[in-house]
Image 1: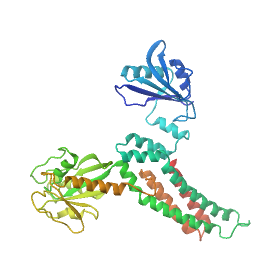
Image 2 (image 1 turned 45 degrees about the vertical axis):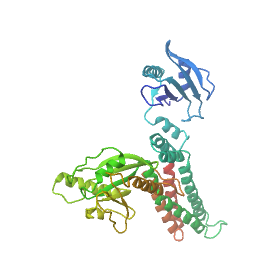
Image 3 (image 1 turned 120 degrees about the vertical axis):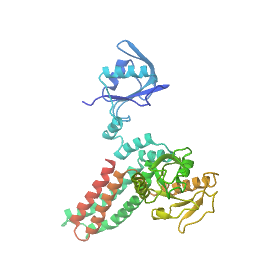
Length: 416
């Protein structure tokens, strides 16, 4: 028999209100035992809750009968006063009545298992809870609303249409079916392959919105990276000294720019060093620069281009630091912005430039954003199989059918 579970749906600790959520076949019996019988579905009612003669609280209670509940099971919510003693007393009473505390994510797992949402929507619940920016929340809400699932379902419908045409020719060769029926699946597969490629080309956008856009400061020692890092994060996060090689490790700071989550990284100056500690810091700086979504190449008025030139990519920004000490200079092929952390010159322009870059890279698409590596891998599997099936259409319809089944299976696994 399925357990009846309960969990705190509000943050733990002292507060005005604490909500305990219940789900499972024993929900109604538990409500009756606590003194909250005869509730009208989906209407809040004030009840004096007690267990074995001991008062618990005067609470608002809501009941959600199956299947019209979050989990698809009988559910209820106890809106208690938020003192720790009240919550503990209610929890102890529920355990005594045979309920058990829910495992992490168990309510959403039950919703998935009972068909109330698919796997992509279940993942969106976690993303929405973790969202710290408007962009993250908007993306998670779209996925929770089914936008991503509907897109994948459309891809899969196209695959099944093509597969039906191929299998009709295979299964009924002697019946009155049109000649070359399998080949008529070609245009359907051509459109599908193009759509899958477009979705994969855009795959990193959703992951960057969800996980944070990675910006890395690179440059020579004493170029002003740590000073700029402190200015952008608005606190003294990095140690700044005139001594070359002060920064030995990668320093990360999470911030929000233009409504998007950003992970900004300060790194060791890029140079060869015999100091094993600094050398390790430089190695980490180079690795972080390679993996960054955007590099800010920091160059002071007296600095040589040095090793950082080898890590800067087209589209990265050249930040000309210490603008108050010397004339700015450009590097061919890179947009440049002069700044001074001493006078504040150019800092607002730099912030606006980054915000515009984030908006360009992370907003807008013909497809809902792919938000996880798991999705991207399944799309890649589906694309490879669909392309193989398209190539086999004119040669061996039997092989094409097998490829199309694999592609449909890969897409189905995204939504569970």
